[in-house]
Amino acid sequence: MDHTKINLIVRLQHIDNMIESIMSMQKGLPEEISALEEDLAFTSRQIEARKKIADEHQKLRERLNGVIADSREKIRSFKEKQTLARNNKEYDALSKQIEYEEKEIAQAEIKLQDISQAEHHAQELQKKGRDLITENRYDEISEEMMPDDVLQQQMQDLTEQVRQKKEELESIVIETAEEVATLREILAEQRAMVAQEAKRLLDKYDHLKSGTLQNAVVKLDRQACSGCNTRVPTNRHTMIVQGGFYVCESCGRIVVHERLFEEAAVGGQQ
Image 1 (cartoon, one colour):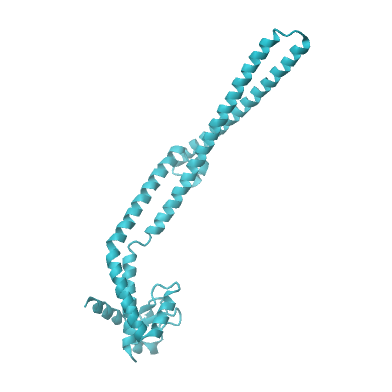
Image 2 (cartoon, rainbow, N blue to C red; image 1 turned 180 degrees about the vertical axis):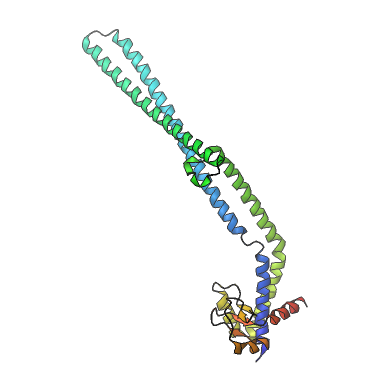
């Protein structure tokens, strides 16, 4: 058996592993940042929704107060005209106008009460939410119960966490960029060698890597494939120990003796 080919593919996996090890330093951070940004967007939407309702209430309150003030002025004017009415018909017409404006005032006042009740209800919910927070019963708090100041604090905290995580990720990327770039160059050179000397093994390697497997080539560990822990047939142990390889019948990985990885590591340092 020509062990040169398998040594080449093991060396390729070793370099891949080195790159993966460096990249693992930032693993989780992009996902953390994404999750934090989702929480930040959700909190922002809550705050914006409350602000929109508050603005709408304020505009409606101003309009209704304007209607009331306008109607009261009209009533005052109509009553003055009533004192100068020349006949009952003119007096009754002014009375109907006064009655209409009084209804306008009553309807506006009812709407103002509705606004006040809605705001009071929202405040009561937030008060209940604050009590639940004090008792650490966060799982019982609905969106409406979260106090405004707590939402604002969450917004600030999440914004700061996102900033810190992004700085941390950027720092790792900058620190490892040169090393990763060098390893990628070495990886490209190694792939070229494998493509020339062991094309079929490279195709197998790439096929495995194109799926969900991180490692296409793994060590024999305790007589089993270290990728999926499936035992390797006894009659294949000798071949693996002698520098050959075995394709795991369970996961399809290329199983080799751990010595080949050690030799790949030593070869890379030379």
